[in-house]
Amino acid sequence: MFRDEDIKQLENIHELVRGPNYVEVICGCTSKKYGDQVGKLKISSTGQFQINCECSAPSTCEEVGVLEEIGKLTPEEFEKHSREKEGGPRKWKSNIWVTIKGKKVPLWKSGLMRYYKHASNEGKLGSSSRRRGTFHRDEFLLCSKCKKERRFRLRTKQECKAFHYASMNKKWKCSDHPCDKIKCGDEEERASRKSCRGCPRTSTCKGCTCCVCLGCLRCRYLDCDCRICVDFMQNAQP
Image (cartoon, rainbow, N blue to C red; front, side):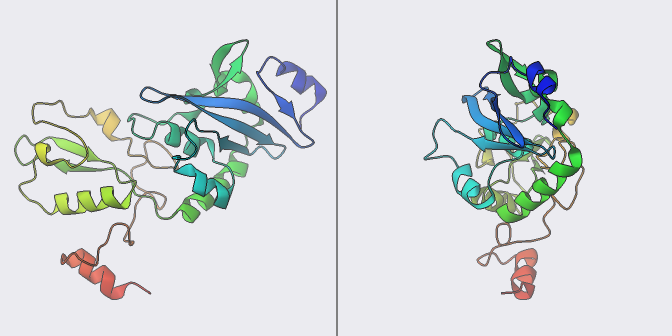
């Protein structure tokens, strides 16, 4: 797959390493809040893309434990990890870059995407999502006062629980948001941005088995007496 003439076309990529059945290169993804997050992109001869996160703060990186269990991250996971709390569409081919002649060049312009094979990466995404546990996409709640929808990110059990109790409050308003400082006078998200709810499969997913949870111990609670939680706890298998 990696012929000498192919490698010659990629020789301007910074720190490109050629192995027996793979090539490896330093890559990164830039966050407006945290700056550049760096990793090592490994492209196998089968067309699989895997990234080893080399966070600037590995001791606090939430991916460290995951890496020990599942190996490397998919490009989608690396982009999400690097830009965790930033909204907008996920476009890893544009947001992940490599360095060519001292300049950051997105993957789709680098010449590396010619080796990407969707079938080789599709299975990796599903497997890693299952090993991490059930994924919860972003949800929206309507303010009882200004009638604007506000986003809740459900990446942790605490965030899921905060949304769960907020959704049961019929008088919930913007100022009650547990994670973000929002006022009724703040603008509502545009419809195009609302369509991006964090699905690991595709950014504009309208709901699929990868991002819609029908009930788990992260979003159902033993100390909650609502019908949804009570039914789940009574019927859940030990």
